[in-house]
Image (tube, rainbow over all chains, first blue to last red; front, side, top):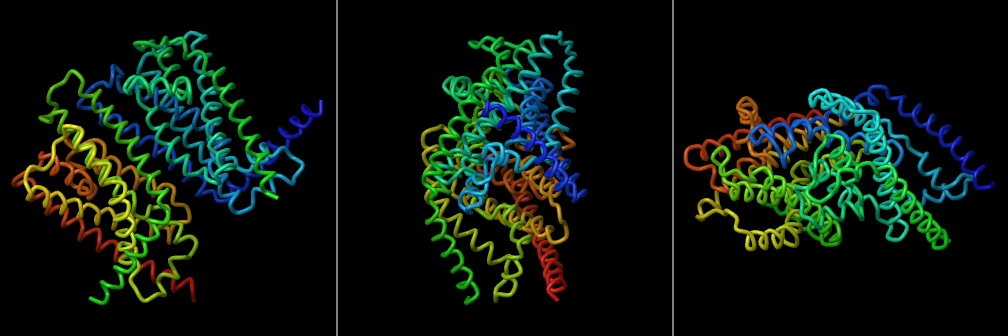
Length: 272
Length: 267
């Protein structure tokens, strides 16, 4: 019982703090809009690069331009949601090094919630703006008519994708409890991995496909659901795997959260 | 001469600092390799079942991507845009102006030191192995090597001038989001860093040809794989030279304005 009421209180506080964070970011209205437009523009830039690439080559591994845009935009959509809640986890190392992390431990809120609530990144609305527009355009251009269950798969991919990528960000931040480094790991491991997933997974060697399906399951963020949603096939993986993004997301996030809490306990004992 | 010795001292210090942060150099190399890997497989798939596209073979294209990634690895050891912006925002740059040296030159020489370390300990060994193991196109004559190195150096200086100019815009803009994105987009597409200009639609190729960015990666890469020779090569080098002068003049202009801006705020 204690556990549940603590979570309910935490959730209420979370939204309270999020509201404060949004108000703070809205103070600089020009910056607020430029930030959103800037992000949307930079993703549109990648889409333009894909267009130029396919101009002379027509298709990539049997994926047409709009199919590729769908694959890319699906990843950006869940990443956008993920950035809102979890992107600042990557810089946990800075808080630990500066000693400012300690304030998250002395307050009567769950430290994970508190750290999560510290920032609510409205810049991510740019990702959402781009990805919603791109998914819509691709849906029209590809002449898709999804039955209800496919909308369910789509929703599960977005929510599951958020949990998978959020979980991995939490995992990267947890490394800081042991090594006092995390931001670098994001830029060196997760950013390139995410970039690779913007293209069809079947491009890459088998071993890598296996890793991003079973170990760091980025494949469930966009590739596997896109196979199912666009009626495409993979030589060895069934497209129906794409229906399980949500379940995979919950498991990944659960594990990563546990590891984060383990790290936190370790930090406490070392800090004094 | 004494001036040069002063600036070389900055290179030496930067080299030593890099040596102290070896971990950074290796992690940078790691992500460089991942992107090389990714683009290698993308181009492999694009070329599957095709012979020559626009008169370019897969071997040439693969060599293009490898040398492009090598140059990007070298560029990546310099001061990134966000760091320049940070120096302006925090006011560190004002402290630099009070000192008896020229900041744009000082910063360039510091980057030389960082690059020398990164190049010798990470980029050179890795790419030597890659070129030895894979059957890639390389310059076949010493004059081609010289032209490649010259072109790559011009490309570096063009990028340096443009990047620093963009960074200095922070003096006037509170929020640099949009500016940053224009810079990164142009650098990634119009420079030919991942897609050579050969494969662009004609109108876009013409546009890219008249922008300074193609001089950063596209020209040296094309020289390296032997796609750019004779008259066209001379013209391309000349264009690079012109763009370097233009971007340097713009950098100087923006720098002098920025210096005034600091004096105004300081008084």
